[in-house]
Amino acid sequence: MARIAYDDQTAAAYKAVREVPRDGLGHWRDAIRRHLRPLPGMTVADIGAGTGQFAAAFSDWFGLSILAVEPSAAMRAHIPRRPGIRVLAGHASALPLPDGSADGAWLSLVIHHIPDLEAAAREIRRVLRPGAPVLIRQGFPGRLDRNEFIRWFPETARTVDTFLSVEQTCQVFAAAGFSRDALEQVPETFPTSLGEFLAQADTFRRADSTIRNLTEEEFRRGKERLRRAAQDAEQTPSLEPRANWLDLLVLR
Image (cartoon, rainbow, N blue to C red; front, top):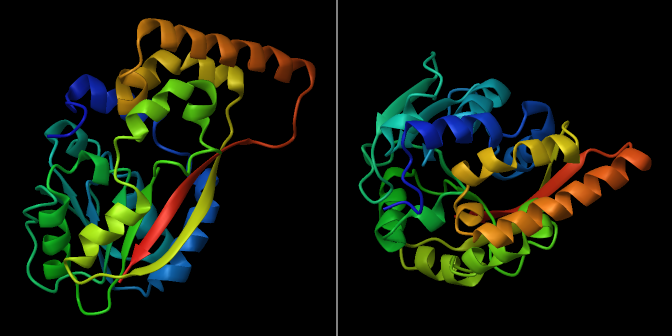
């Protein structure tokens, strides 16, 4: 089971606050292009596609065919229905895809929700064509010093520390025949201010497993840190947008 029950309320909250504005994903577009080397007509399996943010982005950026696999009906309801995106109910450990049907696999903030990652790795190997990459966008333990949630809500690291490390993830996928090809940190940016982020904090808590696990006191302290930082930012505005950094792990 996922670490959150993605019901209608949670899916709506996720759609409202967890999707990164497309203008803030330029660095991800460039990194994906380098490692996937996309060509029009290629097929990518978006595993744990959520509300379809990256399914739509891959389609728009590169003209790819997307197989958007998502177990939650509430999340699937938000995935755009349009040519080039096929929405499928399914789990990573039992993908509803034929053998050798994809030129790449994309997993965004999802591997910590997969109860049997070994089975999922074998399934991904089955559906990928030879040499196709697995691209994992993830926050890994010990590598989130530039993560916004941990900056303002440091106790979220308690949950992140239960996730598999980079090394453990590579070991699991190695058993399915994959090897590590690349690891890099990629920034994403947001047009909203810290004050606007603070105003959305309660919605973030409904949508994010790490913040949801905070106690009321931990959440209150985090909001107070944000409030003070937002006040300081009003006094000394910065031309730099808010930024968050996550890892891109590439396996082949």
